[in-house]
Length: 301
Image (tube, rainbow, N blue to C red; front, side, top):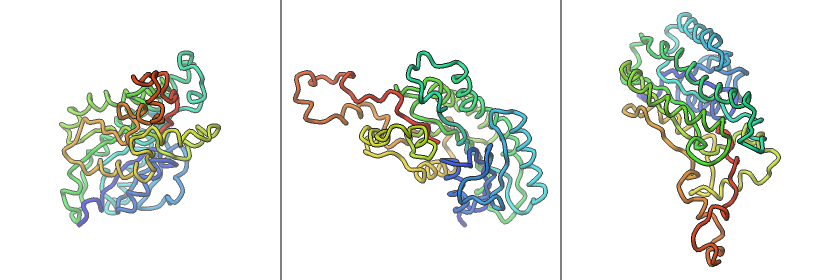
């Protein structure tokens, strides 16, 4: 039996981008998916078993609480149809358009900063708080192998913006906070049999990211040149990474980077035109000669 078959996952941000992509991948692999989003489910995801869609704003405590109550009610109504959720993938969030377009990160409007932290950090904690009781519910489905449901996990989606000089101070600060959140909750959740990890993605070319940088036609090609693999991640690759996190039963309290080498130290230096290295002023790498990357990394959603 495929140990992925028959499991249930809660996924946030399933209306588009990585959230929708991971929902489609889970469904393809025989999972039941509980999708949460402010909007309708993404293309190709039909709101009927094994996919169930719940409208919720992750920054609103009451909204997420109601969605979880609806999930619980759905399980009570269809108790033998699917297992209790055993994994949660928190993909909702992203950089705000107002921050991406702001030319001076020192003078960012405080309302924009607070809204970014609200969705990218506070909203993730709200989800964790309400999802944990669902993950702890017992599954009484004897046909499922115990090994397939014994492991439980929460995976949060972060960004390499949190560890590098890529601009977007509000977004970067909020995503950096997810590392502290995972570390601080690893033991209390671990005592409950729940793993918690963070995946820090580099640029993933989603429709959302394309919209943020629609005015810059060379945005993604520049980022490809700055990556060690000379490309950026696809939505399918990002979804595969998140699916794999549900299977790493001994991994918790960890931040995993999946960025095609965008954040590898020195990669900006090696992306320079090699002919420049013969110039006297290029014998020692100087940051002033590196390609400008300030504010170029888009949200991973």
